[in-house]
Length: 293
Ligand SMILES: Nc1ncnc2c1ncn2[C@@H]1O[C@H](COP(=O)(O)OP(=O)(O)OP(=O)(O)O)[C@@H](O)[C@H]1O
Ligand SMILES: [Mg+2]
Image 1 (spheres, protein in one colour):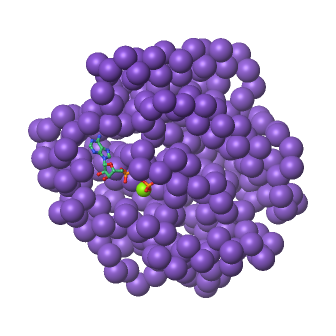
Image 2 (spheres, helix red, strand yellow):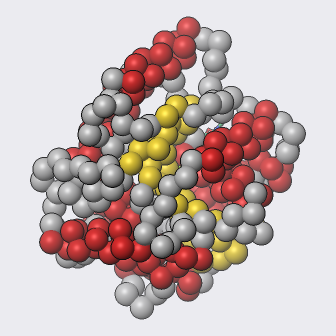
Image 3 (tube, rainbow, N blue to C red):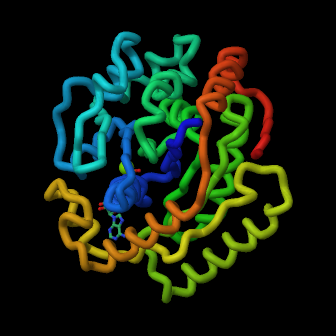
């Protein structure tokens, strides 16, 4: 049995806190002694910048497009207990280059099989879209964490995201579950934020008995407060724990990391192999299928 929890951080809306959450969750997990691999699937290449790393021998683009490149070739050590697979701007072209490949949905999941036992957590930072790169992340993952902001229409955005995830991935990755929502840049004293959180909670409460990938989804507590230190840290190539370990942002992300670590979920090599078989027999997911066992 593989120990790695493979988690995609996804919201198709841009600028909601996906990369900030990926980096600082990874740092929180690593500080607790976990071995963590972070993979940047976004052509904006922000994840490497957050860790202060821009050039690597091979990127996630090479990993996806070149059969001979392994994860071990592509990864670089970013911090104690944290390995990183960087992105590059060429990755934007991968969406169209991948389209002609028969195994276009599960290239990433196949590539990570050999290293599943080497890590406790594998975090995948997704681009703000639901294209083939994101599908590769979702097919490779067991869990989904959705960073979001409590804006007007946020609930509609999340439920649309979930439906799209279920429709796109249901046939390719029956075991995928939405683990939780991270409220980012949160201003809890505003009426709008309170209303959005109440609506979200009602939405999840009404899904508890349903056979949907989000039936066990939680809204993580505490939310991540808006904190300027979180916006400053990346320009120094630092996590929030490197940059300002006592600020509100560091405290919030430390607690979030604890909450995620406290949930016990496991993925087996067998699960991944099943995904491989299922996805190679289904070129395009056309119907909603789910088995959240
Ligand atoms: N809690 C916070 N307080 C203040 N600023 C934040 C916070 N979280 C994120 N930011 C800032 O908000 C901006 C967007 O965050 P981030 O890059 O993490 O979002 P994203 O969802 O990954 O964006 P994209 O969709 O472009 O990949 C960044 O400038 C980041 O530094
Ligand atoms: Mg990002």
